[in-house]
Structure formats: structure tokens, C-alpha cells
Image 1 (tube, rainbow, N blue to C red):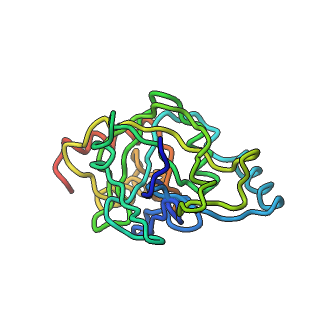
Image 2: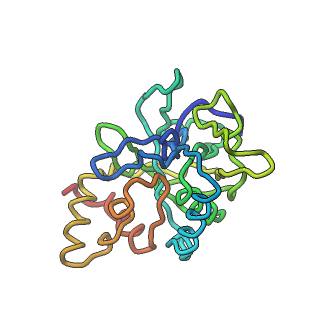
Image 3: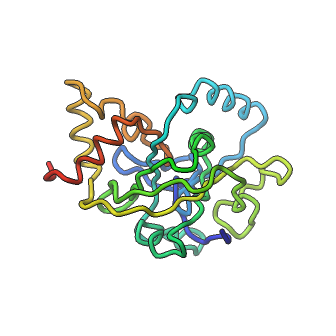
Length: 234
């Protein structure tokens, strides 16, 4: 895909997604993809720590469902509108785009675990009412994110080199918009209820690792959230 001037995914400048009262990723995740992603220069020593953390990270578990955050409302950064909502993805040729701009190591590692055919929720973040807007699928597995080398891009990372790139992206394709929007507020109520009494959302990463713009979902979590579109809002 050609370089974009939007943001998705986590954004710190990646998806620099500003925390949605406990649900967003907005800190040096530096992943703000043009849909949210972010950047942080790391010394060799800190990279070693990241590698060590990644080694013990839950990303090593086998996941096939994901939640990926992007900003559906206009927010300008260095003169560039970071807006990229599910309708923007739907309007693109073949309804497909690259999920660039992620600048958080754990979020990046999750993307590297993605396989063609995996499904992901398109989550609207840093907006009036954050929540799950629809479904998309992975159509191309992780490859080098070109925006890290583009000095004009808000996700440029001077510490990343072409012969040793730090950041990856995947291609996603729109599948459908949910029959109703599942809000963060509703999910949070259920998370707290499930945490206290037991339930599918008790350990959902949206609340236990809220700052990540790319998050794994268990099949149980994914199916439960998907089933909510056919139920009345709480």
C-alpha cells in the first residue's frame, strides 16, 4: 500500500490513541497507527529488555482473534489528520489497507503473530464513544512498515534502519460493520461483573493491557463480544 498520511492502530504517535478512560493506548506505545501507533528510541540495552519481555509475553500463546484500535475522528498531528475509522477502511479499493504506524514492541509482536484469515475487531478509540465498530480480517502477514523510514510521516523513527527495521505491519480487509456499536462503557460493566463473578471478559486485554493498540482475544472473549451485537445495550 502507498504511504499514508493517517493514523491507525496505536498511536503515540502510532496510533497515538489517547486513553479512553482506561481503554486506550496512548503512550509510548508509540504505536499509533495511522490508525494509531507510536515511537520510542530504545538503546541496545532497553531492546534487550524488550526482547526478554516479549519472550515471556502472552503473545507467545496461540491466538487467532484480535482487537485493533484506530481513531475515527479528526485529530491533527504535525499538520496531518490521523483519522481512520471503519468507514474509511470500507471505502478503500478492495476494502483493504495496511495497518501501519504501530510503535510499541508488544503490539508489534502481536501483529507478527497474526496469520492470514485471522479475524479482528475494528475498535474506535480516542473518540466521544470508544467501542467495537466492526470486523476485519488479516489478508497479509507481517512485513516491514515503510512509514518508519519516511521523514515526512508522523511515524518516522530515526533509530530504525532499512537493514534492521524495527517495525512491522499487516494488511487488513473490511468484513462488516456490527449490527450495533458495542461501546467501551458497556464492555467495562461486563468486565467488572465477570471479574467479580466469573465470565468471558474477566481477563480481557482491553482492560488488563489497556494501552496496547493491538490486543489478543481468546476465542471465548471474541465470541462473547460478537454475540453482544444481537442483544439490547446494557
